Length: 88
Length: 223
Image 1 (cartoon, rainbow over the protein chains, first blue to last red):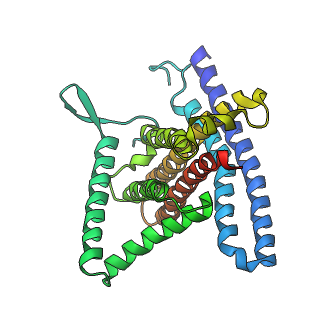
Image 2 (cartoon, each protein chain N blue to C red; image 1 turned 45 degrees about the vertical axis):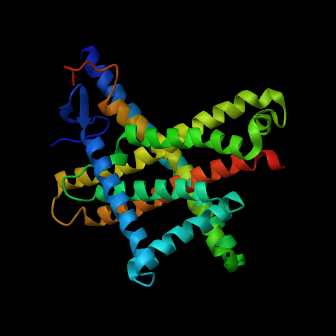
Image 3 (cartoon, each protein chain N blue to C red; image 1 turned 90 degrees about the vertical axis):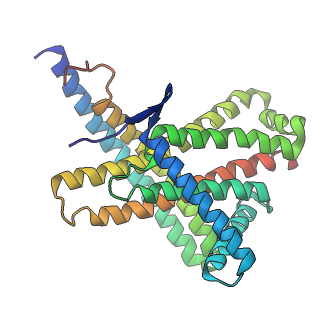
């Protein structure tokens, strides 16, 4: 097992863990946002347009953390600076 | 089988400048949008009751209303900026669904350029609305110690704008590419439909967030 193999194994595991934890965090946060928005919509249906706009914006803000995780995972997999170009 | 994530293939060289696929796609989208804008402006003038004119007026009016709601008061220039951002990003995302076209917003260069436009329009709008002193004062607002945090937040939200749009569009495109490689026929169709939704949603969010940032800079000195 040479260095490149070890680096590849570690990079793949790190990408998997990054993606898993990032997805868990964003999923929990987004479900809370969705539940809160449902609650607000049930209480004040007149404010539907404003609530929906805020809902989408906050969903996107929360989801961006998991998108950052995805980008990091893809960098680890496909653009890893420690993997030599001929290696993997 | 080739998945493109960060790379951008060079199609040809124009003198010393390499012309990449993203540049061609975004230029084509810009030309198409400008043509549609000129055409609909003419239609609004000549036949104000045709379907095209009504759609164009509705679009402009909805952006005016959006800016008035988000930024607090109507603002023609901000509405122009956010409307242009929305239309360009939405058309780039939808153009990515055409066969063989890679979406221009799926490249980090395009999204960074758009985010840099927002980054520079925030202080310009703030200084235009409040004067140089009035705008710079809000950096020291609760406490001068927080000035570095204000600067970091401006830079990090620009980065977040760019990476959010890039990550969403690129991952959607990558997902479709993976599914096509796994099972080509009809399986990727629901994901492509989801991509259409996500593309429009991300364009909307980019436009709204830039409006929120610019609106916050405009109202910074008015409290």
